[in-house]
Length: 122
Image (cartoon, rainbow, N blue to C red; front, side, top):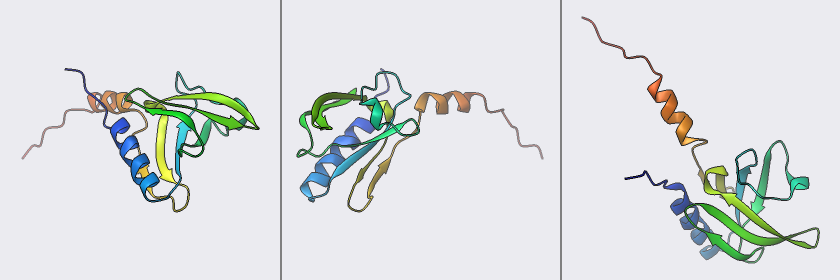
């Protein structure tokens, strides 16, 4: 059975909690990841912050693979698509409360495999 990431479930849960609490959910996106579709003029140092509040988006969809929606940038409607593995954090704009996600689970697993086997000697 394939391992299912917990990140999309947490993103949905935090989004719901923030909206229910009257807070504004934002995501920080690593734009170097494959499949990220965002307006390039707003990318800074390879990252972009997106407001994913219901009031700021239309057709918001948060599924296990992507966060996608339409939003206005400089008055022009644009379709945004962000793979969930490109989301570094979700946080409330008002107080910064939220959650960071693992940068890359595959790299972490690979680095675990490269660790030397150590044996304790008496």
